Image (cartoon, rainbow, N blue to C red):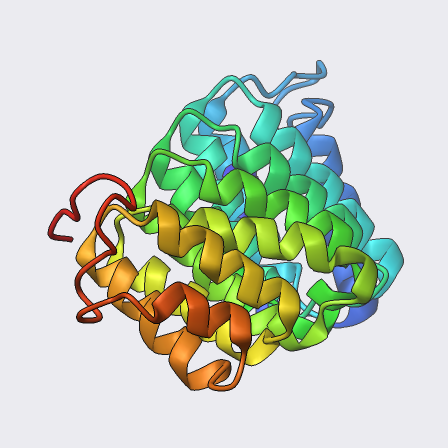
Length: 278
């Protein structure tokens, strides 16, 4: 019966009023905590049935959109429990639910949501981590900017992931927030962009270069000159040269670094290991 009720909630969840949603969340809390009483039995029954918990998490993604802060807090708390559940399928469903509600988060909810992203990014299942990475990109950039320090911590974990797609998603987010970086977070952001340049994904490179081009300034110049010496593939090397020429045409340090280059694809003799194809 409990599962049947949850199936109904999946169908009607998006049409519930605020007051109805509040009552539903109270019921879902009880189900997830295995404290609900079976209407078919006289004795209380603890719901160890994982299929019930799966349905609860799915419903959370439906009813959890655009909620007042007190109700959203309950949804995020239940999703955190789902990420901690021993059943792996719940982890992916929790990541999906987080994706469903992320476009409607408020300023007061984003900090808790980013904590869940950190938890999801430690998951052993690459599908869960990918879903979390994709979700981060759809969150309103102004919300991410309001929690920039925490956002950069999450992005650092994304860029360190072994999965190419996840690293690429991190670069996309970095590109989207470059105009919102406060001065006290600039060093951290630049270190992440520099790290993005050391990967071999074309999309990750392109997004990092776009962000560096828009940020500009002496710190970006120094980063590019440093990477010019360390570049080990032609695509990165060529992009660095092109960006330096376009962004710093009259800069003496840039002119000195580039003057002995015979072509954008050729490093100065003795300037490091031979360039590999990308």
